[in-house]
Length: 510
Image (cartoon, rainbow, N blue to C red; front, side, top):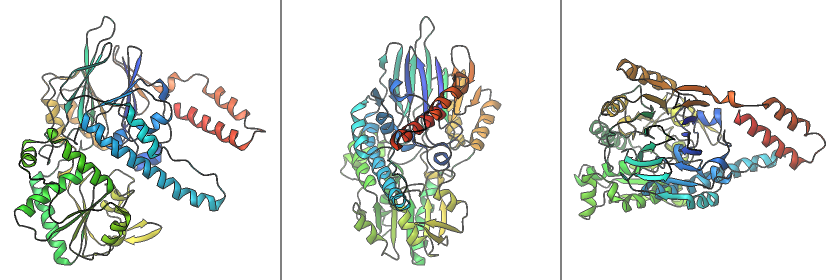
């Protein structure tokens, strides 16, 4: 058996790894790169042939884990996508929303390119393609061992990171070898976050593929962070400003609503106006309400007693663009939760444009900000940022409440591994920036674990314990390129563009 590391290896986004098992190719996640990762690596192609992939095992619905599934489908994948029921339902709105964003961004770029006389671009995929890819999804329940094909079984355990998120347990039997168990974390959840259950314990793993997003950081406690958020709201309103919360529309937004509902029930806030300004946020909130079986005991009891903490007095879901624009006319007294969580797209950019320059306002970050994103720039002290071609001063009060993150911190990650009944033979560290990976690797190694930071293009042979780079598999790459380059003469523009794309694919596959 081999594991090839394609994405979120040496970076935080674009999760994507391939298992070679009994002649089959199984993809673990298929996520979009975001921020710096997108700029450096790109999303427009794969370093493998999508037509050769037999299955996708999807850990959860976040776009950095699922967002290239429609592109995979567009490029020829027609196998099954295995995930939990809640993940499937969330993807049914999230992937279509992602396709819509791809279309809108390309439409904007093409208007500019048309004025320049340049060829139009096409989106990575459209919402229609995303919708078609949903026919490939097949949901299985938590805690049930399911045979996918001969010698390959899967079981999902609740990862406590997002509604429907899962640790992926893979039971693999090849030839006359003993069965081995590979565990893929996806993302390890933070304990005591609202609505969903805490991360499940895993009894053991022979090999572990593990995220390290916060491998070098410790979160404040959830209660401290919630109290701080309440104080920020009170202080901001007293100054005459608004509270703007860039938030992932799925997961984090619902958790914030849940906590704000507690303060309203306790009469700590009167006539609080909360705007969830995201059509995706509204749709995903409905999906949350359909999956109360995934909730922790406290939340499930509230729903069963007719108390919906995700829909309280003063909460406004804004779907239309016109309603969203009206929010920007409010000078004070509003809490605005809007996507995207890293501020790189969506309606949040408009709210930042109208509030970021105002000293009375507060911007509260409640999730990870990847390098190269607008959110990261603001959080790291930028005095000015560019929004819609205009420089905006950063005068608002800036806060980071990482205790609200859905990711386990350094201690949470380590305690989760320590709960295994025995140490894995090998831990492959992924989904982290270099500082976080190196810090967490040292912690593991100092405690007797055998860990390895993997990079994109690295291949681990589980049977013999060897490693290689994908480059060593290339044959006659130079000759392939020369052949296509020679054919560029005396051809029409359409054919030329096609050949250039083929060359790009060859380079990506290298």
